[in-house]
Image (cartoon, rainbow, N blue to C red; front, side, top):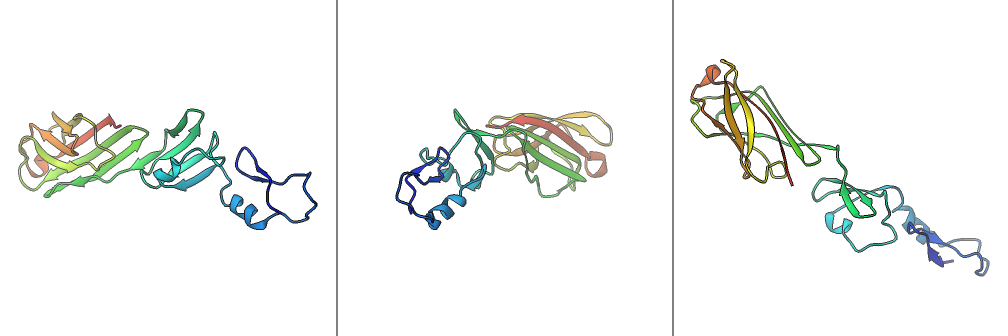
Length: 187
């Protein structure tokens, strides 16, 4: 027997007033079983399809297009804050470091690079690394920069095109070790 209506969450309902039938439509029940739960995975386009009975307040969505997690609210889809995404810092040619960390939690990106060294001497406004799309600031973001040999402060910046720039350092090798630390918002 085919269902006569759907529940508020899209499940097939079989009316009591219909002709007696001891078996529901197994294919219809199976299709619904594939969609139940409170978390689904799919593309942004699938998530943004017109409202359907399968969309309900509290539904979570793992978006395979933008790699974000969403929760459906009375106002629509909202990114779930607090989930960290890890990015890869690409060091420029001739630059090495002991450690590099790039994370995004909600719309805040945090960067830490420890003891970056360059085989050639540093030059003013040299690009140390590149930050991937999705982690870049809309406008330049200042970064705390320290010389590891002397402990003196330098300035640094992440550009909207993803370049991590160091300013004011001219040392090379271990005398020119630089560490970078900063956070910035992204859209």
